[in-house]
Length: 153
Image (cartoon, rainbow, N blue to C red):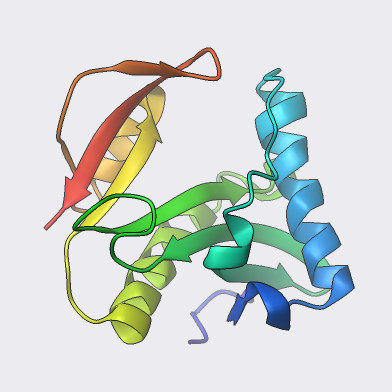
């Protein structure tokens, strides 16, 4: 899918990622989840190998990424999208919304239509609600950050 922006989107299995793509993805996730959010946690959680990875490139820069899971891998009865991240250097340009739209389309293409469950950071509830997700449980603490379960039917 080529959007009307200059982002080139690709989706790959873990084993199909090049070492440069893998490094860029892990670096971006670390930049945001560990450094920017000041959160000490192990990002490499042995789930990357089970996921499809979306990568959004502007030239040589990785500007956004998610990981996509088939039904029953992260949540019983649900597909899932996780590690949703956009580059701080490219924020405010609608890339996060484009990333989610692409990720939702890819879930349907790869896994078929089905409900999708995410563990959203609480402060992003409005953002995910705009993508069709609804809160599906109470606030819980994960890595010292408030999260909520959300489902898109």
